[in-house]
Image 1: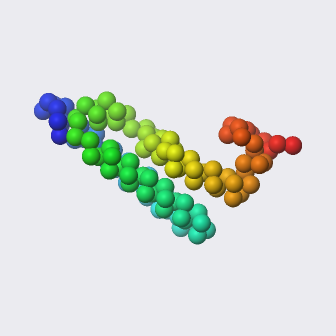
Image 2: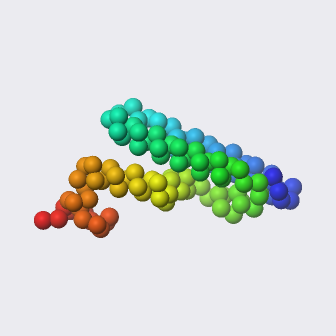
Image 3: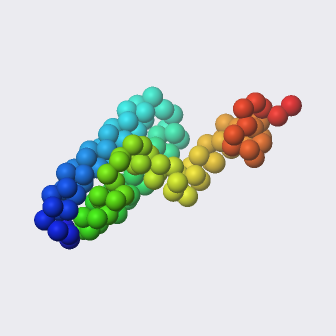
Length: 116
């Protein structure tokens, strides 16, 4: 880890919390797989691969300042990283097409009611 002694100590604590958050999100996804169809299981497995790629990218950063600046306030940051990934968005678009949601709800992702 690169930084001052105090930065490193702080970043190591944050990094541990970040890793735990990646674990938590993975467990949620694995739990969701138990209730899904084979196609949906495949989608969730793909999302887990995205999650693990993001974990490797984040946890591989050796800059203490990165964890202090970018990860001090965790919130739902791991989930937001996944949702922002183009591969996740492609999975969701595919699901919408499979379930006919694209045609029913139009292009507006904020649409509350099906088109008439």
